[in-house]
Amino acid sequence: MGFFTKLKKAWASPEDVAQQALDEYKKEQGIEIEAKPEPEPAPEAPIETVEPVETATTEAAPAPETDAAPTPTQDWQAGLTLALRQAEPKLSQWLNIIVEGVEEKGDDLWDRLSFLFKALGAPDGEAQQFITDFANWLDEMGYVAVAEFKSELQYRLALALELEDEEDERDRLFMKLSEGISKTREQITKRIDGLLSSHSSLDDDFWEEFEEILIMADVGMEAANQLMENLKARARKAGTDSPDDFKDILRDELEEIFKVPPRIEAVNPPEVLMMVGVNGVGKTTTIAKLAYRAQMQGRKVLIAAGDTFRAAAIEQLEVWAKRIGAGFFAKSEGSDPAAVAYEAMDKAVSEGYDLLLLDTAGRLHTKVNLMEELKKVQRVVGKKHEGAPHRNILVIDATTGQNALSQTKLFNEAVGVDEIVLTKLDGTAKGGVVVAVTLQNKLPITFVGLGEKMEDLRPFNGKDFAKALLT
Image (cartoon, rainbow, N blue to C red; front, side, top):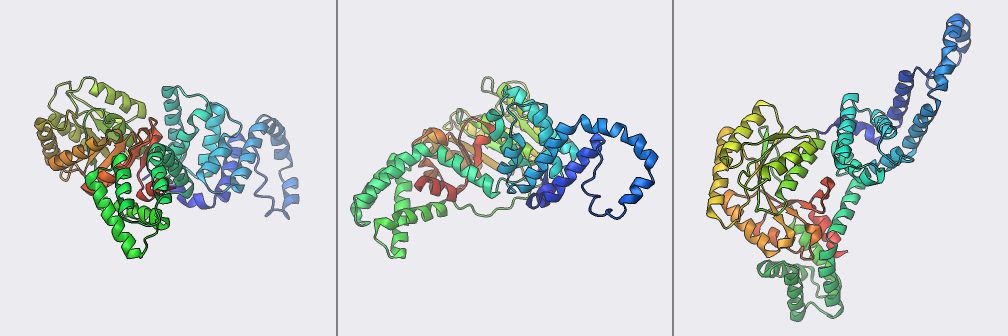
């Protein structure tokens, strides 16, 4: 459950809570609240003047001074209230209003964020914790200008408010995905457009040329054949042989390929994710990004350094854990990874963690001893905490192309992979490996890496991918 789950009811109609926030601010500043009482006690106005003549005079003296000092602040509070009430109830719209005229981090920004949270009805403690954590992160990263971190702030708010599925945020996610696969789109879509313009029907020559396009995009021979058979069957079923219909048929097929079957989400806490993958695929940063997402959603996260053999692996993970404020567990270099997993599991249970992210060694996947080691870690964790690990997540690098397929096959055979995180998708023109991995292994891709920032690990949506690829 996210930090601001209680805000969801306020999200759709913010008018009343925004006004309430302004009233609360006035109370804190010792400013008299006239706005609300005016409509009701209109007939009683004379009584107010008669009875508390002296009290009014005694309090009237400081009142102008109190009013005088915070007037500018009161003005921006009132202005924000009005602007928020008139804006569309969208996160991006509200954030634009909050940061308008603020160039850098500092008290002005924190005051305005506090006001936004108050306007949404957020508990003070949780709101202030959010701001403190964000301010610390900015110091750690060395960001000063709002332009440098605004998108990060919006991302954090979307996670904390559980608004990642909100239309506005989905549009932003789609744009990020579209930019991230631009190299792949250029490789595939331009060629498909050329293919469609040079053929009058979906004949044998058409399919032969299309197969070449798929192989060039690293879909691979086996997956390409399977995809073409599926597309031919769709075309027959639709009763069409026209190239004009081809993109729609391909888009529908890709959506079907990436459709994720329903699964039981409930686990016996703490949830345990075992992260597997070879060295160099971005496993360490993926662990940090997943931990970061979970923390923004209000979960208490522990990261365990189970890769005890790679030089500096423990130190790298510890740096990331500190940077994002997650718990961290490690033993000395060269320790038995299964012992690390066992003790980390013990810590997660005894200290009330919601999520344990367990890093593992990533030496070459062809090494039998690595796979045996992973099986041992899996067994040990399961004995310590029934049902664990709840998910085995394989991290693969999109730029490695067909190599990613063999990695997926071997790790899946060894420990059973539940889902895939595909990194560096923004750095390759051969993103067809996304299709190949899913088609050949029937495993869902849950996240894709589209850059270096924390916000660049994005939930993968097959429908959006098909749309972005073929637009």
